[in-house]
Image 1 (tube, rainbow, N blue to C red):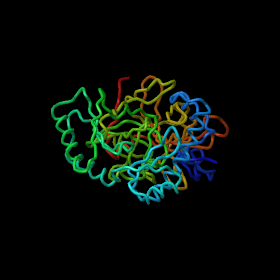
Image 2: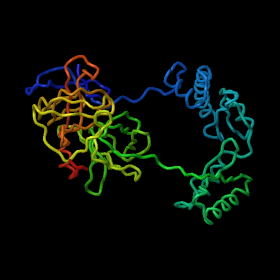
Image 3: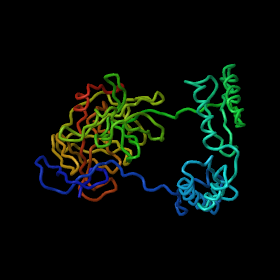
Image 4: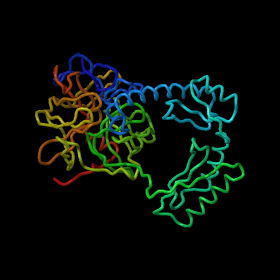
Length: 407
């Protein structure tokens, strides 16, 4: 049995030059994560909560149980109130979900849902209405103002101020926001701090993780530019949905997958796609994540040759090397029949789809993009077979240029 490193098992081809009817291949696109409801027996979460929240093992387990119950109650409240709640939060002392409401009928519905109702003066509609007015007043931004929003516990609004960049315009905006709230009695508080939030981007590195929306996990291939775009190549079966938000390894947004629906191929032509890196806090690099974290900076691209060595980098299994065993192969994945693929005996596993294949050593060249592999993972067992899409085909089709470094 082989896999394309996706979720469904599909038919494939052997590593021989002549294809035969063999067991299926699967994609390396990892399946979506299971339901993330907190599990009191999850040792990793317990350890992290003890460390970061200063809890005892018993306290951590109790908190996880309370949060699981609060999540259930929140779902029931949403159904019962149809969006009328003026706010919700978990009360640390009681361990109960608290819901802000303005009327007796809604308070009874909250209680029936298993939560605690707290009567407040201002409804969700009033808070939202004031927030929209402040949005309009802010326009494209105000110097020194880092954001604004609802404070559910206080049944009020806040405007966040960076004291380091505060100007007269900052004070004027806060005063105007407070005046907007005056007719309804909604307080608008200024929260001042010598800091400002920022998107925590990073560097696009081949072989590292990226996430296409909520469809699972894939790996970065190579950074590219061209046609007014900057982005990275990855597997086409990772980019099938048009205009899907793409997230980096730290969970922050880095760009858009298959922008416009014109940059994803997963058929006879090949298995390659493009993710536009349109967030300025993410930078392109020529690097591919290597052994023990040491990057390999590609200096260009080259065609894979049977019998030559190649190394593969993927977010799931890391850095592994082998030989190219066949080129120009057709693979039937079940979900797609793809021509022009190459085989290697470098191990791989689910989540490696889209990762980078490079020649080694000395002068690393981009060779291919990971497409799929056999059931034999890097933990051993079975005959190792991995499949890659030659990189030059994608570069040529979309007139892209690799981001390269020095030899």
